[in-house]
Length: 112
Length: 113
Image (tube, rainbow over all chains, first blue to last red):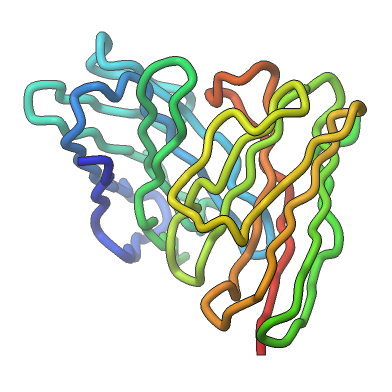
């Protein structure tokens, strides 16, 4: 019940296209859902985050869509660029002092 | 403004040995969390230190221990190393024990032979 599932495992998108990564969770106590971006040789960096009382959050080319009833959330990267090529992790967290649970990651390659 | 720093960057040990990894949090942060990231997987929470005490712990054996110093820097110690301990060890810092806006360091790559 503490798991966060993520798909696809890998994704290849053409430059200018839309990248979509999906995540699902079981624990209804989760109330904070961040997305992290990780480049090779670097630690993960917080990209964007959402709470379940909001159905969508947009920051620049990155949008999180959240479906509380389905216990699913997704990351959309609009106008994908080669510089977006990285591994993306969805994550979830419960009450204030709870730990962050990461999904297994999606390796995104944006080809010119 | 220095971000989260970790040392060493790479480390090779043999089974049964002990290792100490170090982390300095981002300036102004007082909380350090440690994660283990196996190849091709997401980070897994090991434990969190706040006010020099272990506040939370993930599903890791007692071979994994840590410490936080008065300047908020932290160490991760792993005893009796196993081949399966080979991973990237990440340190993340935040302000306060709520792990929402946390900043990760580049990690220490540990290889156990």
